Length: 549
Image 1 (tube, rainbow, N blue to C red):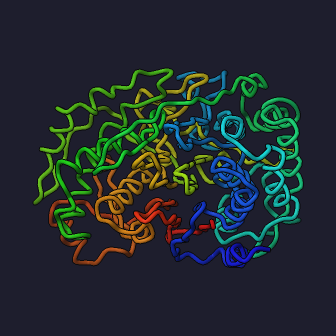
Image 2: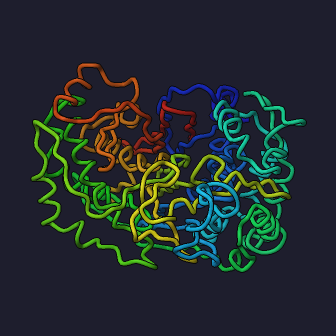
C-alpha cells in the first residue's frame, strides 16, 4: 500500500478522535465525516477519478458507514465546478408522493410527518449520484461502486456516533431497522465492533448492474414501496419511476474580491448568504476586534436579518419566490440601517413562517489542483429519518415530509413553523437549509464548503467564509473558531457551547441579546491557499476525516 495512504488507514481505528489538523496536498484533497469514506474517495482518485468520481464514491460509502444521515433513502444538493466550465447546481432533493396534498396531515397523528410511512418522501440520492457520474464521471460506474461494495460486504468498525445515534433511535425503528442495525436478540453494537451489511451490498450490486433503474425500478423499488406502505405510507412504484433530478443555475455574489456560488431555492441557503454578505459589506464587522463582543453582536444582527426573509421561500416549480423583494437595494439598506452597535433591535417578521429542519445532515467537499470541485450536502432529515428501514435491502428511509408546512401554523419536529410557500403538494420538494458552496477566484475554486445542522448550516458556512476571506485565517482555524447563530425567530442568539468566556456572554446580554449556549453546524471544507497548496479540514465539533495527496 502506498505510504501516502498509510496514515489515513491507521486513522480508521481512531474515528472517535475529534481534533482536526488541516490535511495538505498538491493534486486533490477531500474532507467529510468518515475516514472509511475518504479512504475510498482517495482510492478512486488514485485510479484516475476526477472530483465527481471521488464525490460519488464518498457518498455511496457514507450510505454504508453513516446510514443515519447518508442512506440511499435520502436526498441532497451538489455544487459542481469542472475545469473551464461555470459552476452548476444539482438538486436531488426528495419529493412528496403523488398521494399527498396540502391537507394531507390534517386528520393524521401528531407524528405522522416525522415517523412511519407517511413521513417518507421519494428519495433522490441514487438518481443524484448517477446523474453526476453520467455527466462528468471518468471512472466507469461499475468500478466506482466496487470499493463501496467491498465495504458493505467486508464490514467496517462502527464509530461512537454510529453507536450513539443507533441506540437513541432503537424505539423508533420498525422491525427491519432492529434486524439490520442490531445484533441477535436486540443486542447493541459497541464502538469498534465490525458491522457487515450483505443486504445493502445486494442493493449496491443492483445499482452497479442496472444503474439508475436499479433503484427506481425493479426489486429495490418494490422493496421500498412495500416497506413504506406496510408502515402506513401511500406511495406507488410510479412515484419512484417518475423521480427526476434538476440542474439549476447557482446564485452568485461578489464578496471581497471573490465570487461565491450558492444553492438557489428550494435551498434557502443562497438567499440567506447573499443577504449576509451584502450586510457585511455595509456594516464591516472586521473593523471590530476579532471575537470581541462588538464583532459577535454585529454577526448576530447580520444573521438575524439575513434569515428574516427565509420563511417567504419555497420550491420554485410550485411557488414564485420574492427574490426581488428580499435582495433589493432598498430592503438591504433598510436592514443595514436597522443595526445598532450598542444594542440589539427586534424587527417584525415578513410572514408567519419560521425556518426549520433537522440537524441530521452531512457534507463533504472535494477540490483538485485544476480548480475543479464538488461540494455536496445530503440528508435523511432526522437521524435515521422516519425510522423505517426497507425489509429486504436494509435501506433507511427519510422523514423529509416534516420539512414541509404540514399543518399551517403548527411547529414541526424541532418546534419551528414553516411558511405558506412550503405547503405539501404532490411532486414538490420541501424547503431546505442545505448550503453546499463554492468560492472562486481567477476561474478556480479556492474554497469548497458546507455543513450539517439544519438552519445552523447557513450561519456556520457564512462565518467560516468570512474568517477565511476577510479575517485571513487558515481553513482549520476558521472552522474551529467559536461561532454564533441567529435565525430571526426565536429571538435568541445561540453561542457555541463552552467556547465563549463569561465576560463575552455578559457583554452580549448587556446589549439586549437573549443568549443561549448551544451546538453549531459541523463544517467540512477544502481550500486552495495563495501559493496553490490544497488543504482540507473537518470540524472538531464531531467526527470527520481529511485526505488527499
